[in-house]
Length: 292
Length: 120
Image (tube, rainbow over all chains, first blue to last red; front, side, top):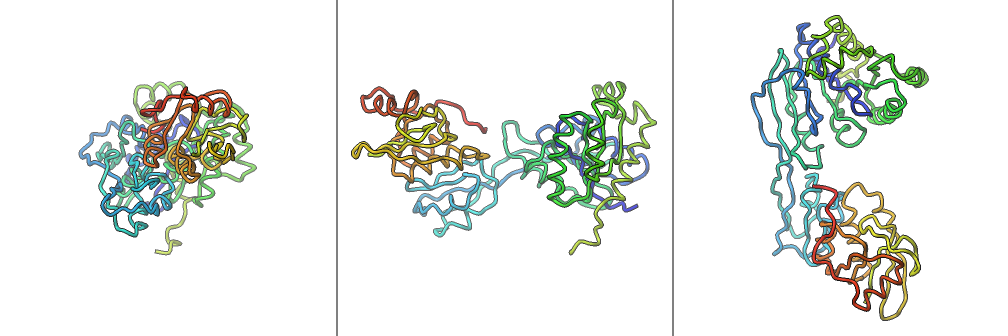
């Protein structure tokens, strides 16, 4: 089994059990003597640390570059605003004005300005925290409250996740930019769903997203036994492997509500999480295909 | 002078659209020629962010110096100010009625945004 592997855990719908799968898989692997790193990219509400009882050992602030306009040099030509697809800078009168909260920090306006009137300063959007627990190297992003833009923070968090071993990424829910930023570069994506009409609807959106990015993926059906058979039918028709099923069990919900690992409350499920990882690893993209 | 009025339809009989950034479109009324034209706001209705800023850019491009609308958020206010466009909020009814109220001094010029932004 290839140990150097990045597996992202994602879902369309929120609350399907991404974090449950990510933390229990990480803990089960660690106990099986794997070298594991867990990266919590759900930066709007990072909660994996609760289940792993992580003690943070470092915290550094995460910043994005934002444009500053030198009004002496700016002639209001508007070229900066023409390249900015986020409306973070625009010249409507004589001088360019900026909206730092909308800026993604790409630096396009700096390059576009013919008068060299734009420089960059930085704006704090959150923090990157690191720690260790149960032998698992832990990294998480923490988006500042009120901040609307998580992709630059997710990018910064992932940059910290380097080295050998297994990397498990806990992605945010949904199918928009933060999710794409979180799963990009992974070797395999585990899509966690619940077998309900809502779960299936959002699974379909997630499948469409992951297919476009071109990463191999499989489905874990959480709370199996509730809802109906449509999720299984969908996966069969779409030729998507179901790489794990976690039965609906009140004891799992109770453990979750106490901030405990499922594999501590129900140790017999440890091999289920190892099995999910094993199937993900064998379905993963082969790195040697990469043009390095 | 040209006046931009946020509108849910294409002419003077259309209702005022209370939103600025995501208004369906703008009726541009020329007070000297007494003529109106329509500018659709299709691109900004579904913008992910910055709809108010881009709508300010759109009406700035028409040469309008006055905006009549229902509400205006903080970023749109800043952008409209930079473009030298005066803002009159609180309009309702038809575009024609709103222009009449403006012309007779029955609409107040906004001193700031009257609604919160959608982002921090």
